[in-house]
Amino acid sequence: MLVPGKMKIADCTCLLCGSRLGLTISSVVTGDNRGACPMCGEPFLVSITREEMEQYIEAEEERPLREGR
Image 1 (spheres, helix red, strand yellow):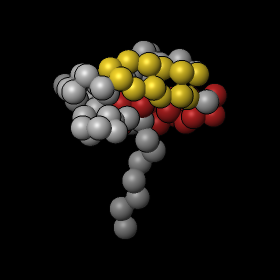
Image 2: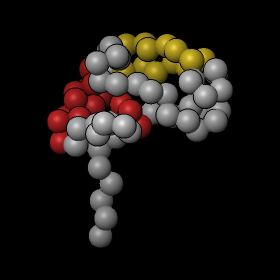
Image 3: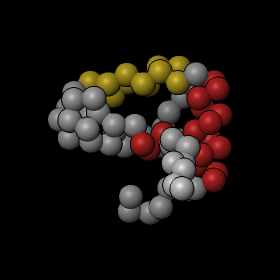
Image 4: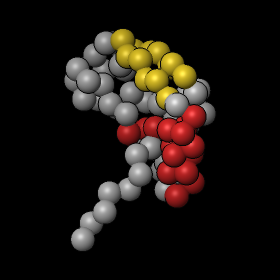
Protein backbone atom coordinates (compact mmCIF):
# COMPACT_ATOMS: atom_id res chain seq x y z
CA MET A 1 0.00 0.00 0.00
CA LEU A 2 1.36 3.40 -0.94
CA VAL A 3 1.45 6.00 1.79
CA PRO A 4 1.88 9.60 0.67
CA GLY A 5 4.85 11.46 2.08
CA LYS A 6 4.53 14.54 4.23
CA MET A 7 3.71 17.73 2.38
CA LYS A 8 6.71 19.93 1.66
CA ILE A 9 6.58 23.69 1.22
CA ALA A 10 7.55 23.16 -2.45
CA ASP A 11 4.26 21.25 -2.91
CA CYS A 12 2.16 24.42 -2.48
CA THR A 13 0.31 25.24 -5.70
CA CYS A 14 -1.69 28.12 -7.13
CA LEU A 15 -5.43 27.79 -6.49
CA LEU A 16 -6.19 29.36 -9.88
CA CYS A 17 -3.92 27.50 -12.32
CA GLY A 18 -2.41 24.66 -10.23
CA SER A 19 1.23 25.60 -10.86
CA ARG A 20 3.81 25.22 -8.10
CA LEU A 21 4.48 28.51 -6.34
CA GLY A 22 8.25 28.00 -6.19
CA LEU A 23 8.43 28.24 -2.40
CA THR A 24 11.44 26.86 -0.55
CA ILE A 25 12.00 26.25 3.13
CA SER A 26 14.55 29.08 3.16
CA SER A 27 12.19 31.56 1.46
CA VAL A 28 9.23 31.30 3.85
CA VAL A 29 8.64 32.50 7.39
CA THR A 30 6.19 31.63 10.13
CA GLY A 31 3.16 33.84 9.50
CA ASP A 32 2.01 35.36 6.21
CA ASN A 33 3.97 34.72 3.02
CA ARG A 34 2.79 36.72 0.01
CA GLY A 35 3.77 36.61 -3.61
CA ALA A 36 2.51 36.02 -7.12
CA CYS A 37 2.15 32.76 -9.02
CA PRO A 38 5.07 32.44 -11.45
CA MET A 39 2.76 31.03 -14.15
CA CYS A 40 -0.41 33.15 -14.07
CA GLY A 41 0.62 36.09 -11.87
CA GLU A 42 -2.28 35.61 -9.43
CA PRO A 43 -1.37 36.95 -5.98
CA PHE A 44 -1.20 34.37 -3.19
CA LEU A 45 -1.04 34.33 0.59
CA VAL A 46 0.30 31.29 2.44
CA SER A 47 -0.10 31.53 6.22
CA ILE A 48 2.20 29.14 8.08
CA THR A 49 1.85 28.35 11.77
CA ARG A 50 4.79 27.32 13.94
CA GLU A 51 3.54 23.71 13.95
CA GLU A 52 3.22 23.66 10.15
CA MET A 53 6.73 25.10 9.79
CA GLU A 54 8.09 22.30 11.99
CA GLN A 55 6.29 19.73 9.80
CA TYR A 56 7.70 21.30 6.62
CA ILE A 57 11.22 21.20 8.08
CA GLU A 58 10.79 17.53 9.07
CA ALA A 59 9.50 16.67 5.58
CA GLU A 60 12.47 18.46 4.00
CA GLU A 61 14.89 16.48 6.18
CA GLU A 62 13.18 13.18 5.28
CA ARG A 63 13.18 13.75 1.54
CA PRO A 64 15.25 16.75 0.44
CA LEU A 65 14.29 18.67 -2.69
CA ARG A 66 16.17 17.27 -5.66
CA GLU A 67 18.04 19.58 -8.00
CA GLY A 68 16.08 20.52 -11.10
CA ARG A 69 12.69 19.92 -9.53
